[in-house]
Each structure stands twice: as C-alpha cells, then as structure tokens.
Image 1 (cartoon, one colour):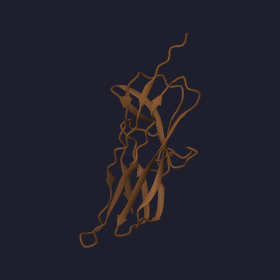
Image 2: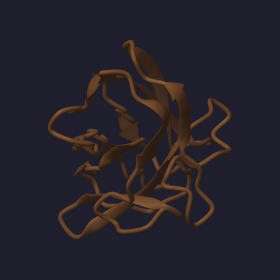
Image 3: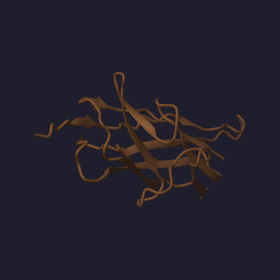
Image 4: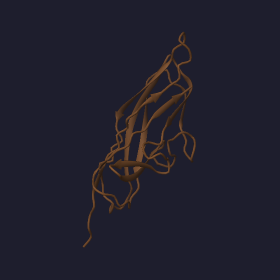
Length: 154
C-alpha cells in the first residue's frame, strides 16, 4: 500500500522594489504591484508531473524610465537552482521563470538566470511570472512560502 504525503505549497510573492533616484530635482520612482500571487495549491509528491502556477505583476516608473532591467532575487533559500519555499525547517524546491515554457529562470543574470529588459516603463504594464515545483520531492505536510525581492534598475 502506497502512503500518500500531501503538502500544501503556496508561494506568496512579497515584493520589495528597489529603484534608484537619480537626483532630487529629477526624482524617479517605480512601482510594482502583485495582481495575482504565484500560488501552487496542493503539492502531491506522487503526482505524475510538475506542479505549475503563474502570477501577474504590474509595474511602471514615473517619470518614464528607459532601458529598464527587472530582476528577482533568490528568496529565503539563498540560491537560484532551485529556489526553496520553507515551512519551518522543511524546504520545497521551486523556481520562477520568464517564459511560459519554464525554460528561462528569472533572476539577476547570474547563476544561469536571466532578467526582464524593457525599453521604456512609462505606462503600467502587466508581466506574467511563471512558477514550477518539480515532481518527486519528499516533503512534510505544511504551508510552504517564500519571499523574493524585485529590483528595477535603469
């Protein structure tokens, strides 16, 4: 008889936006809003495929920022390959991606990651963020979460 372990895994994107202010006379700021969290729902280690989820970010800079890089930090686990959600001392691997195929890890351009580049961030734009928690992880039941930092540079 197989024993089924089920862990509720939910990634809440808690975002802190870091943006440069060029000068007091030419103050610029950027805003990021989470329109939809990346929420994985229930994780079943015996499922037949990866657990995928998607979220939605909305951002803009005022006045207009050009040549904008949007980078996402490692989260509480401290690494990109993979990132980890935590429930107490337990960890559940996952990652965040720039593309729906989940082939390009969204990071800061290091450790095999890439970042979003925008020519202009004058108007509000919505950007999808794709998540994947790989199959076959043996984890204790619990509520898993992580916090990542979004940095906007121009």
